[in-house]
Length: 213
Image (cartoon, rainbow, N blue to C red):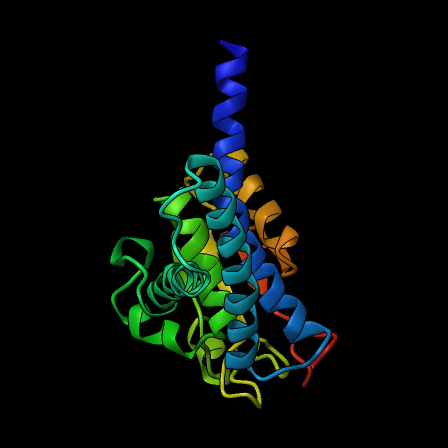
């Protein structure tokens, strides 16, 4: 039984690993190389496609020594898989994962790396709820909060907001803990805001405001 469980965990890890690499590579290119948003995504996609290509090469190598797909075919299949996954994650997040319908349009104003990371964890946590994304200074006043000068919810010079808020109220703390760990491992900054408006604040480093969260 333990052997079967170990095999299942190993298989799941192998399947998930490329998509972890996709996000982590994109974050690295943003933070360290300071590339523009879509160049970071393209770099992550390219690196992950190479990894998927290696997977396909090993898989077909073990399966049969005859009728193997060509190098070009395997590479195109790898890029197709990663490209479809990325496009889906960047431009589609289920309406069930938003606090309100307005946020579905607002999420397009959030940095694509952050959008991709949220859509990825949403596949595993179906009850994940995004409560906030892009903001304007006057939004804080409307909520009865002091206006902030350097919030990463504001649009940065690259045209995107660098922060989102996730609901923590009404959820198991263990679930909140694992979500926070996931984002930290992916290279994001996280802050737990407690009180009447308890939520998890997740942000991507802004080179405009490197010390803001």
